[in-house]
Length: 323
Ligand SMILES: Nc1nc2c(ncn2[C@@H]2O[C@H](COP(=O)(O)OP(=O)(O)O)[C@@H](O)[C@H]2O)c(=O)[nH]1
Ligand SMILES: [Mg+2]
Image (cartoon, rainbow, N blue to C red; front, side):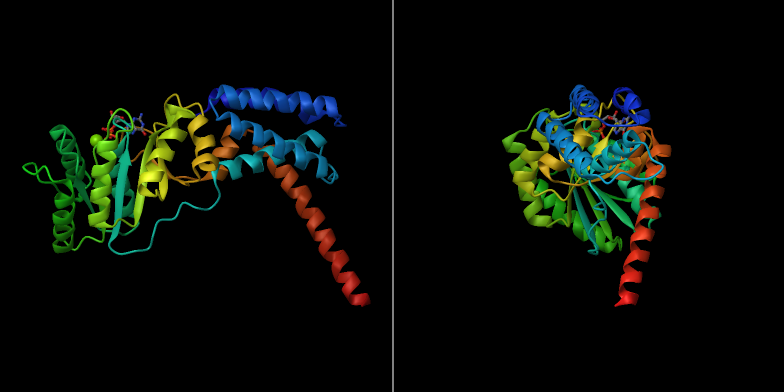
């Protein structure tokens, strides 16, 4: 995942890690390389620019920590900014019961697979999930979902004779209730591109079933193009989250790093393979550490910061004692 970005960021920062003193020149040089690394990972240019600016501002205002090289401190700043870019602590799902989840996205992004994967994951969390095949245009998609639902022992509903997607949705809710399911996942149809007709259909389904979560499934290999896809779906459907798929493949990082700050929708899950088990809650911290590949430096700086915090607290206590 993101090997090339990791390599490029690594080389930009390696030179800086050891330097005893940061000068404007060596910092500017490194930050330029960081920006280039982000751009070549197909991160949206605005995101890359703002990222570098934020890092720069923080480097200037940073208090020098004892026992930490300035370059190492920058690694920590970049790490923290990456975490922010990927989105912090926003992966939880609505607590509504039944929990109704609408899966939307382009054709081939991984909606059907992710519907089954999410069902499996939620089952593990104690839900009784039910999946619904709403892709009436491709009978094979309904078969695919049915097979996966059998495999994972999830409730399943579809109506191969109906062309009325909102009606299928409503009937599915009734079937789910009868089956005492407490989580209903609607797998919908996709097109190769954003398509107004299709969006209208999903909107009608949305209006009828009133989902608690609207998750956009995005191919992680898309790059910054994912941003316009997310925007279009967000405008039409008010997304509540994203699922980035195929993160095991040639994902360069563009989609993951751009989407949260431009479309302002949190990444909630990632798909990391073709099997139903290859699916996980998204942890920004974990991915940031993987991208940077410098966990040792990050924890070193964290320790140094903790020491400072303790000292400050002691100082404050002392001041208070003296009154
Ligand atoms: N490697 C990999 N393949 C995936 C992942 N998610 C989906 N796929 C594959 O992508 C293809 C399209 O998936 P599908 O769920 O049918 O997409 P849909 O058209 O959006 O419903 C299938 O061959 C899936 O096996 C993933 O996380 N990793
Ligand atoms: Mg499908």
